[in-house]
Length: 111
Length: 114
Image 1 (cartoon, chains in turn brown, blue):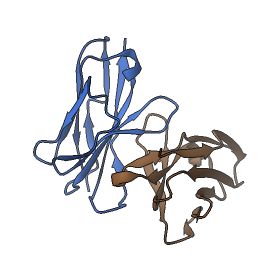
Image 2 (cartoon, rainbow over the protein chains, first blue to last red):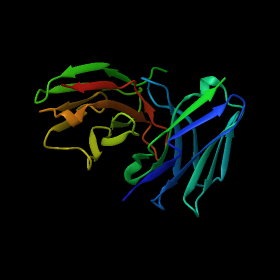
Image 3 (cartoon, chains in turn yellow, blue):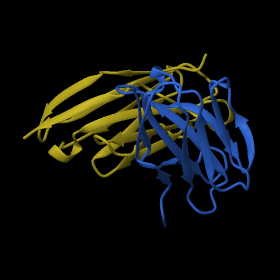
Image 4 (tube, chains in turn red, purple):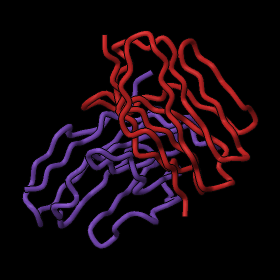
């Protein structure tokens, strides 16, 4: 079935360090991979997405890489700041366009 | 542009009672999704509408959950009767309807079953 695995479940970094979150998907037909940031008690917010026709996409301190052969995609946050602390979810599109979400990574950035 | 609106924000009911949630998507968005997010997990799709038709309801517990989007805009999700395991945040999302467009989420309704 359609499945997305996300690691690690928790990640603690010092302010200014980089953070990397990795996801693996099962459906070879998936071609759209968004990342969402969810602060406590708030809505998931789209921070970056990538489509299968590119291998990397950057937006300021955030980048996402995609390896279609290995069915892996990763989120990279550089120069982390305390306000980056949140739960991050990766997702892959499934049949009909629905999103299959990973289990989430709780990122803590310590000042 | 106004975002996805949901109400109520919070709801507390006893098991076996019924409850309904409402969602108003972003104006012009043809596709509407209802997700269930259990504490500590990622959102899981319950039902997807394209205009007023159902695209995917394979993970909707149809013996107790129902949803409608009669005029292709607002949507309601109902649970009757509620079970303890239905305690979760119910998120509504919408997208423009064309393939692989970003989904934008509402603030959700946090449901607690006593």
